[in-house]
Every structure is written in structure tokens, then in C-alpha cells.
Amino acid sequence: MNKLKTGDKVPGFIGKDQDGNTISLSDYNGKKLILYFYPKDNTSGCTAEACSLRDAYPDFMEKGYEVLGVSPDSEKSHQNFIGKHNLPFRLLADIDHKIAELYNVWGEKKMYGRTYMGIIRTTFVIDENGNIQQIIEKVDTKNHAEQILR
Image (cartoon, rainbow, N blue to C red):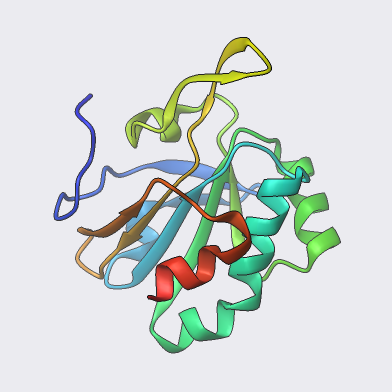
């Protein structure tokens, strides 16, 4: 699949949130959406990123944005992550990484000399018509909300 770019229409998806509810992109028709992909619940970088988004959530809501996180973790893991860090937004359990593949953010990563497949941390800012306004590939986890709001 070709890499998505600013101005592109985002691919539709269906997934399950932390409570097992079916969520689809069409649920956000007519709404602005911050769709962020992150590697793993309760890791330092992912926690910093989620807490940055949590702290700015009122600002996002004021500007008309919903926030939706996606990782390959289970619904139960997401429930724990949300509860532990008081996250006010939904998280999708993309266990089979189908949504990540649709958005071309599932790929080869390297850590400590080991190569493996995983989520390439990326955020898509989507307008109310389903078009990409902004793509953030170099996510500053501690200041991610500021990166989006700038």
C-alpha cells in the first residue's frame, strides 16, 4: 500500500475499543479526529504520549477534535491503561494489526540490535470530511499535544 500523505482520504476501518464496542471510522463522519498509533500500553514513551493527549483533551474538544488511540494491545490491556492514567478517550485493540497496516504504520523496527515488526508511532490529524490535515511521524511523546495544537 502507498504511504498516506496530507490531503489524502483516510482508509475506513472497524475495530473493538477497550470495552469491546465496535468502532468504525464512519462513527466520526462530520467530526475532526486525532488518530494516533502507538506501540504498547504502559511503556514509558506510550504513557507520556497518552498523558500529553489526556492533559490537552479539553483543548482538543474545544477545537472540535475527538481522540482515538490504536495499538496491538488487547481490550483488557487498554482498560487497565485507561484506568491507570485516567484517559478520557477510546483505545482500539488492533491485535491483528490490520488497521495499522491500512495506515501503513506497521513495519520493521530495530531495538538493541534486534529486528522485529511493530507499530511505527504516527499520528494522523483528520478533518471532518475524512481527509488528512497533518501527519506527525516524529512524535515527541512528552509534548505530543503541543505538536498537534501548533
